[in-house]
Every structure is written in C-alpha cells, then in structure tokens.
Image (cartoon, rainbow, N blue to C red; front, side, top):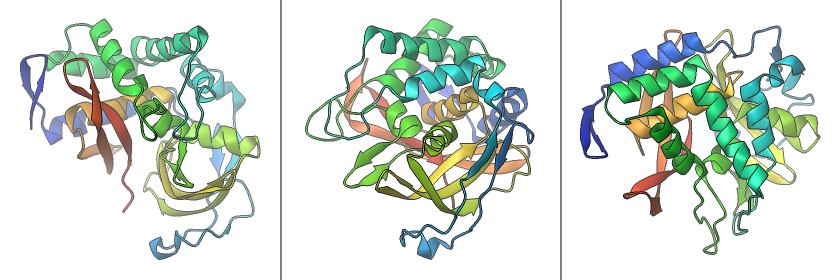
Amino acid sequence: MKLEENGRLASISDSEIAALSEVLFTLDSNKATKSQLIINPQVLLPDSQTSDQIDLSPERLYKFVDENLLSKPTYAALLSLLDNYNRVTGVAENFSPGQLAEQEAFLTETISNTAVGQELYTFLHGKRLYNSEEEFKFDLKMMWFGLYSRLNNKLDSSGFEHIFAGEIKGGKVSGFHNWLQFYTLEKKGQLNYYSHSFNGPWESFPDVLGMQFEWEDFYKQVGSAIIGCSPEFDLAVYSLCYITRPGKQCKLSLGGKRLIIQTYTWDKSTYGDGKKYIGSAYPATP
C-alpha cells in the first residue's frame, strides 16, 4: 500500500504490520494477567440471535478486576477521560481546561512513557511519516480528540468518544469498544451484560469478545473489544491500523493468532492539510 503523509511516501506491507503487532503484543507489560482479571462470558449466542435483545447472562461479565491494575498511570489517565463526554449525539461537547489537560496527559502516558507507545512511534518515524515524537502526538491528538458533528451540526463527537467512551445515536449504542469503560459502567450498575456472540482464540489476555449489552435502556447488538489489554496497546493498535489502513481491514497477529481491525474514516470534515478524523475502529468479529 502506498501512503503519503506530509509530502513523503512510505510503503507499509501487511507483513510489516503483523510483525509490529506481535512486538507490541510482547511489549504490553501493563496488560492484565489471569490473576488480575477474571471474566465470566456465560452464554454464547449465534449471530442470528444478536438482535433479540434478551438478557441471557444473570451474572456480570467482569467477575474480578484487580484495582491495583487500574492505578497504573496509563489506566488512570484513560479512566479520567471517560467521564468527560455527553454520550448523546447532537449535543455539543464542551471541555474545561482541566479536561483538555487530561487529553494531553493520556497521550504523554501512553506514547511517551511506555515501550508500546515508543515502539509504534519508532516504526512510523522510520517510515518517514513523522519527523518527531511531538509531531506524532499532535497528530494523534487531532485524529483522536478533534471534534466533528455526527448530528445537528453540533461538534458532538470524536474518534476517542466513539470508540473508547461510546455514544447513543438513533436510539442505540454506537461505538463503545473499550473494556475499561465496560467494566466501569457495569460496576456502577449502569450497564447490563446480556451475552456474547464471539470469543477469540486467545487463552490469556488480551482476548477479544463480541458482546450484547444494554447501557441504561439502549442496546448494543455486537460491541467488540480487546479485553484485558493496556490502554496504550488499545491506542497503539487502533492508531497503527488507522494510519496505515484507513477505512480498511488491518491484519494483525497477536501471539501467532490473527486479529482483524476494521477502521473507518470520518469524511465530512478534516483537520490540518486535509487529514481525516477517526470515524471508528474495532476488532472485526466474524
């Protein structure tokens, strides 16, 4: 694939993306261990029944999460961001200076302060897509946190809100592909896990689930997420796939097992010199 950024050309092959994803997988020292995270997926639902909206799982999905895991810097930085958003599309987002600082802190913790973030930057820098780490982080800030309108011409959405926090649009849950947001809302009693229609082949974390759930009266038919990975891993693989395979399927390899990430560009508005915001990114679940 030929990809042009800032007047430079780079060719990034599927095999290079797969190899890098294996390195990121290995470097993710902040991922949950089996003793730190215990999930209870319960009922596996056929794809043909995901629209039924029936709660088939009497217990919560997250049986146990070690709170010490959540106190790690990248986890704390993500958790501080998740409550900054109005989930309803058509209502403009409005951030305080403190909330904007939390966006900066999240990128610093995930990209500058972890081996995962540094490996991703080193790869993209080597492909001449970014001249410096600061340039890379600024682009991530724009593509992830830059606001655009999904409804009523209000600046009501961003890639981060859609993917990590989740939204409500058209009477349904839209986006919502982050396991920490799921855990946080389920713990508060605001989210009810119904079933799952996909369970990945991984025996340890990170794993992948495609889930059915209800978020305060709104239903998600299939919400897929990488379960048990660190925030920096989530950000890194979605960013890698969006930058190198925007609007396409991106073929990763985690522990020798294949994972496909589907990304979508936001085509109705741009930033910088015509760059496109992230519309969505999530694990494809067959």
